[in-house]
Amino acid sequence: MPLIFHNIGIPVEKSKLTAKCRYSSLFKMYSEDVENDLDIRKEYHAFDTGGPLDTRLQNLPHIAFKTNNIEKDLLNKEIIMLLYEPFKGYCCAVIVLNGVVIELIETKLT
Image (cartoon, rainbow, N blue to C red; front, top):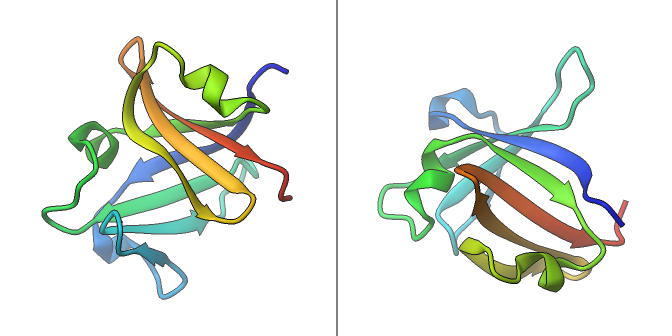
């Protein structure tokens, strides 16, 4: 199966987030889904100082894609966030491909 667009992730200042944001203590990262006129999934991300994530993920926008075989899609790629499962049925990792930060997601959740 080819990759399917999932969302655009955009780094922002914490002041741009609302009370609806989620926090990952593991990554010291805030995430919030954002509505827009084009109905394109967009997420804002903000980071606490000293977080463990690669600075490219913290400072550059990224594109997220769904896949049916994340482990295969990670082979021989520059991985900047290791594969992890934040909750059951949802796995993700982040790579850099040709200078572009890309999140790969494997899930059967809607």
